[in-house]
Length: 612
Image 1 (spheres, helix red, strand yellow):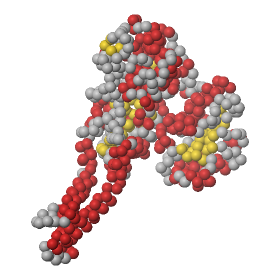
Image 2: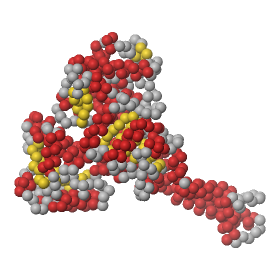
Image 3: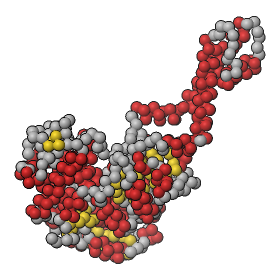
Image 4: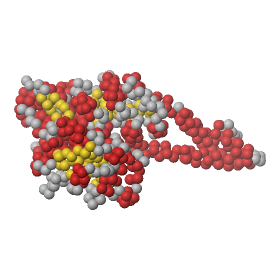
């Protein structure tokens, strides 16, 4: 692949990738401090100024030989706030001089704050005409609130669109300086009102999948009129079938350069985090590996994803040692759900042995235990994952299992929202270690709905993988880190080169389409080992070079022999494919060879739909 990802580093600095506009850290700290303590500071200044005014008037009246009462002095000082008593003749004390400046200023500032509070919503909406590179969040449920508040705390400009005007989180958002439009995000006019044409990101986290999909469609139409940059549209889809269908659209960015779609699912993301933080084995390929046993309570969306991703990881070990992973699944429809999973992911039946138990744990609390369950409990259970939708039922199941497995205490991973009342009992670490020493809570929404979600989707994962492969290949050639602008880690990579990698990912579908292949969600866990034919590799490499060359020519680059000159926009490789040296051609062939493995990293595989 080209861009910096292979050898051509000459993107314009003006071609920066979409960034979230962020305020400096010092300014954010000062702003938070002032927002929290401004009224206390204003009150202290007012009292101080009032005392100075009182003392000043006392000295002034006595200098004139007049004896004013305390009430008169109080009234005169109070009038300073309205600019009614400060115009006095003759010399005045420094106390009165300071007071007749400070008190009107404090009064005016307070009046402005009061007016801003009264017309806050209207003022915030006016801001929409002047902001750019902001984040639009559609839906202010738990997911939307977590994202909005965290991004705002990090100093980003946020606009929220929420249809429910009675949502109590609206006031919390406005107090944080977040613009809130109480409107329907599906309506094109409302997205335009949120200044979508100038936004960097749109995140749709409404409760309904179809609503999020409609928002994405409307955003795509509006984005076609953008004059600069690309809108990154991140939408949450729960239904696995709809999620698979829409994930295929993530690679259509080549056709729509001003719109980039990212699909995320908290259950899939949550399962990956669970497996990463609480694996069956710390070393899955240990030579002392025994037949592992895993218990999954609840085979809903999270439970299914947990089984799929665990099975995929275990499949690599199974091919070496042929040790099957035993999974007991407790669910009201366990047998049917396992059958559907095995049908969708055939490799599961090879590396896993399933024991389905049709029992509703939310109602039974594992009482009474059937014989199959009892037999399973007598063996060594490595991990227990409780994936129920009801928090109280999940906690009851955790306690029941711990009591049932008193002599065999594996870790029990309990999925539950961290903001629920029951989750708070885990907040005191000392007490929870005593009461729940082997029960580990996992806040699904809080752990999955983070700011990383906004910039950590499929395109970003693949773009980083492209860069990692580029570094690996260049290091193998003897080029050292730091020797070129591109020879740095992703975190240190200039923004224009990051965007170059993202653009490479955008046109993966175009290259595959040219040789009769498509992209679909990963089902074959051996797809990373797929190999294209040499003519197919050559065709994709040539397309990569042509795409790179057209991009450079559009941006004012031209051919010149010798080394690349970014300042004068010249490059020695701006020539047709047939004239390129073989060493340069190989640099475009390498990512074509690695494409199946690259796609598998983010849950996709190639498939042939046409034979030439």
